[in-house]
Amino acid sequence: MTERFVTRGFVGRRTQEGPGATRDRIPPGQYQTRDFPVLSAGPTPRTPLDRWSFTIEGLVRQPVTWTWSELMALPNREWVVDISCVTKWTKLDMRWRGVSLDTLLENVELDQNAAFVIAYSDGGYTTNLPLGDVLNGQAFVAWEYDGKPLAPEHGGPARLVVPGRYFWKSAKWVRGLRIQDQDQSGFWESLGYHNRGDQWLEERYSGD
Amino acid sequence: MVNPISWRLATVNGIRDETSSVRSLTLGLPGWPGHRPGQHIDLRLTAEDGYSVERSYSIASEPERDGEIDITVERIPDGEVSPFLDEVVVVGDRLEVRGPIGGYFVWEAALGGPLFLVAGGSGIVPLMAMIRHRHRAGATVPTRLLFSSRYAEEIIYRAELDAFAAAGDGFEVIHTLTRSRPPGWTGYDRRIDDRMLAEVLEPLGVTARTYICGPTALVEVAANALVRLGLPPDRVRTERFGPTGT
Image (cartoon, rainbow over all chains, first blue to last red; front, side, top):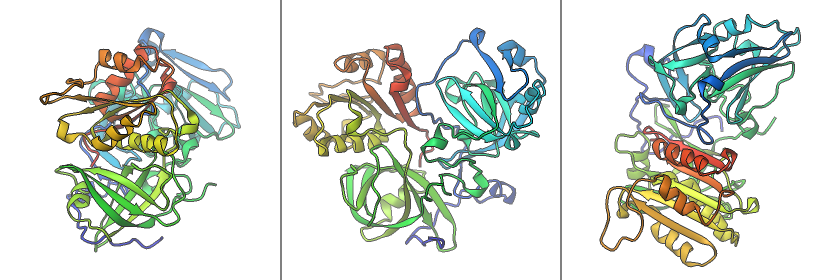
């Protein structure tokens, strides 16, 4: 139905109200939370840092792999971003430290047909993004949240963060990016969730 | 392109109190396409002025029910939606829903077992859909439910779970209470820990298909412990709710 049905007796608490600047930062269908909820499909994987690495592979002239200490040595910065999860919560001003995907991709020469990124993680999780959704400061690999090492249940030691998409695109426990010419559905994208996941267009599920 | 999961109107056909703070709503949904046990729906409430909120609720009922589903809602005192569902909604009201949604945290009898279910509080809800489905489908796969509640009075679906366990078809329920130990209580009386999980899992073995749903702390403890006990991580499926699942 296109017209919304008015629910008898529902008034709401209007948590989204308050300063206009804040209200305007809550995407449709979302509510603001001050907690940092945890959602994941399986057990939390744990890879010791001395065996951890991050790789960019696929349609690149030469794949590149960083150890943990090499990744830490890359130019990095603080990011303060708003995050929206498809399960309806939005958390404002989340403070991370990490390296931009622009910086990481400077270290490879992309094939001219490169068009999509598949992020892959410990535990087998994957998610897909068009290259255009992660360039120009739109995505980073984070290892600190709120001034502390990123906790395992939140995706530590490192997770992808793509603030402009629902949070399932921000792959926890990320270990690499595979560059492809063809798109390929990731874990949730294969299970009925939207391929792109733009929270401002409310692209929650396939067909939205 | 898959068909959109469009919003539709459900009619509240029944309301049943499960505990003092948990109630089930039966939603009539003519033409409901059916669901897989463990899936959820989205619910949308809209005020007169257009203000609108959405929440997700696990489906509690088995897919064999025709044209209706149950959801079970725990009242969160400072929540925005659950107090409305608890206090305001009456039989005959209509609510906007869409679904079914989610395709990973699901179990169907055809998947087989053995089946190990671990629940904390209202985390029982998606697991109850699996248990009810198992019963309705006549499945006999060995199944054990480890269910953590705070107090005996807060055990959701207690009588129905006892009835399923008494059917002698391979379903067992093992309770633990974390805040009390009533006189005559024979179950566990502590938070779920490694030793408890090892004891309850033992008869099923480390090939059990495992589904864990509850608060984050419980899910983390249980999933990590079960992997240490030898369950392959891909046999362990989790669903969590944080303190904001209102």
